[in-house]
Image (tube, rainbow, N blue to C red; front, side, top):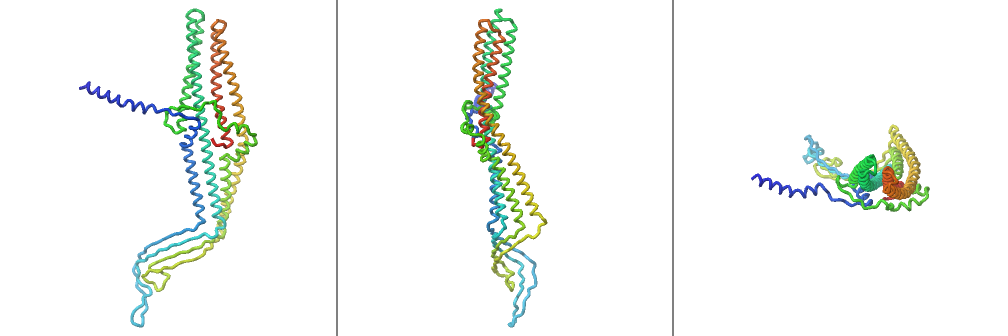
Amino acid sequence: MRRLTTLALAIFALALAPTAAGAQAPAAVTLSVDDAVSRAVETAPRLGAARAREAAAASAAASRAALGRPTVAVTSGILRTNHVDEFGIPEPDGSTRVLFPDVPTNYQARAEVDVPVYTAGRVGALVASADADHRAASATAEAARADVALEATSAYWSLVAARDAVGVLERALARADASLADVRARVNTGILPPNDLLSSQAERARERVSLIQAQNDAALSEARLDRLVGLDPGTPLVTSTPVDRETPGVAAVASQPLATLIARARGQRPERQAIEAREAGQRAAGAAALAAVRPHVAALAAVEPARPNTRFFPRADDWHTSWDLGVNVTWPLWDGGRARADHATSVAQASATHYELEDFDDALAVEIRQRVLDVQSARAALDASADAVAAATEARRVVGERFDVGVATNTDRLDAEVAEREAELERTRLAAALRVAEAQLLRAVGAQP
């Protein structure tokens, strides 16, 4: 019986094993840099928040626009009162004409239309302010989108660079293993002293430590990119865009004069558009505050059926319909200085925003210069690093041949291998840095990724 139970448990475990393995090892996702940007833009929570604020600003603008349109209201009610003594006058025929009957149940309905005729510009100013806030929210959402795209691009190239570094260090570790085996054989035969074996072992250990650190950096970069593109933690990623591919559109941007790039950035950067919109909205809010103390004209039309209707005499427990037509003029002659204070507040805020815009323009000019110089220096450094890698590779080969014939020491060979590894790592880092610098340049001038 015990054997049957054990066998059943084993079969059950084998049946669940594929499901558990599948749950623990999600399928790899292949991503190009464009795919990473698209996914990040679709799933970024900060973009969802920015779009929600943009929708709120659009609704606020619609609400302000409705202030200048007619409004229609319908009310109805029933009122129960206490009984009263009827009042009437006698008629010649001996009857009594009731002038004020006892009607304890009162019914009333009213349909009213209010039409703003003249608002002294207040509604228009409020609408302009709300529209400006909507434009500012839209520009802020666009700026958030550009930031997310740049962050995803940087994370993508960080992952590519980290994996390339792992590849470089794996090759370096393989060379270190081969060198260690060669040195051990020579030490065993008495050709080399024992300290050369210790030096090779120490260098091999350093290569192993560097590889472990690089693998950890690659895993962290993959986890960061997983989060940005909206994938589950631990989802394997396969990068399909080679690091030597130039970012589309960057050549046309980098070839333009600096003054042209600065002017283009001032016209396209969403952050600047948001600042301009906020300033316009604040000035419009100030105009709306002043309009509050000017005369306002509104028209009124209403129909009111009631039972009894107090406008008809004598009062009777019957339905009668009355109507109203009128024009109301309101002129707030004194508000204690509130409107002028609100106007001054809005004007001061607009002035502060204008200074913020000037500061942004000054910083933008410096940023454009920096991004252009970053791209130029990264390209030059990458070209130089390619020469350095070629030279270090040739130097390692020559030193290896000299070591084989006994005219170079093991220390010389170790130094040559380290120099080659460092040159390859530097080229990998510079290639990824160039791609990031190109993305930052496009972001600085306001180009769409």
